[in-house]
Length: 295
Length: 330
Image (cartoon, rainbow over all chains, first blue to last red):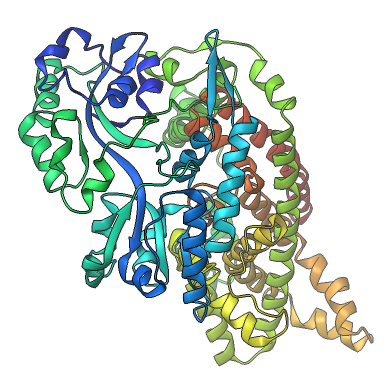
């Protein structure tokens, strides 16, 4: 079965997934799997799933609007704010215009800001997790995010990112924080606008340290085998096929996602390359184990 | 049944004496024997089995799970850990839970009140207007009733949308509240619940209004005329004559509305994109979130049990009143 990388720990700990540590070497590229996806499959040094694919977020922007406002993709958070303000000024006649469209409940896109300032969701000490979003570092990141998007975004503060691609295609938005595959949604002839195809560009979310990029949240999927499956061997074969070389090639070149092995990272071309390029240090792409902070 | 009554009426019409028809209905002295005693139980057995299967068993399981620590691990192992009343003590110490119960109670009071008020007004209106208007009104109500909840809520959501909503546009055009373009109805809890109330009351009115209209048409005209002849104004006629006569119906629709509004779920869940913030939790949503959102089935079950208990406490009064009224009537 396919599981989101943040969900594996929960199901593995509950005993729902087969321990496949002994079969690891039988899968293609198991030596070069993406570290953070492998980490998401590992609980107490046992392997419970095989990395499938990943997606990371970057800023997708409208090249034509940038050119009209005379701005370039920024390389720092301060730069992002000033680029946004220039875009707002250049489009002041449009009351619905957002330079950076940011719905309030888009927590995947808020995490880079938390991490960039040294904050975190939760920290583990002595086998006990405790929430860390109220730490001063986390708060600094969230405050910075708030200062950035308040003047630049007309998005729904109580909404989430579900509508952002459709909104982006309505042509009142210059930038969104999005996954690589969302380019396909924006330019989809049915829900989006195919004419935007040549007008889209992407750049990594900049850090507050000029010249660096912020650590991003690596979303993705893993494939695991149900512990109670009556067809363990068949399931194992299926997982091997889907995560193997042939299928991964198609996923990266056609699907526009990040493949499961570092040996294939160069397969992303065009705009997709931005989403799979290795960001300069600090490399903190990693999945988070979601725990309910209340218990 | 219908044909039997008709046959009785015909035979009664044919023969002046009612004796034969009545005699047939009189209970005969019961025959002795085991078959006689088991027959009634055999006849109610299918219904009893169905009621047990779909009502008693799930409720029993719910209560059973509410005394256990039952998470994802226990679900997979089909085995929970018995923790006694721990889930309930956790709940009572949880400020969010107490707030949610309070919100649900206030929400129910407001929604039941508004539903009954508007439904009564519409029912009274329907009994006064001409036949054509009445048919139009009734059709409109039936259409509202026939709209699936999810579809209706999607359309309401669209109308109250932050970016493209027609409500914000129209209110701005009316120039009463200033510009409401980009007004977010769900930033403020009271405003958000007002929108939810509009949707819930809108959906609840048809059933209650049509039921009350049907009841109104059963109030004898001569009683109303007599009251008017005695010099009562319309207000006095309603409170002195109509309302007391409709009391059993009012009790039934009030208790049904209370049950429906107290467990409101779909409207809030769909309206807020399946991710309502805790400000908008009602007791049903909180139970669902604990059970299926964070896989604490034991705690979720305990919340559901509390919800059932509160409902029993609230509806006990109505049901008792209804039964008393029915007893008086027969």
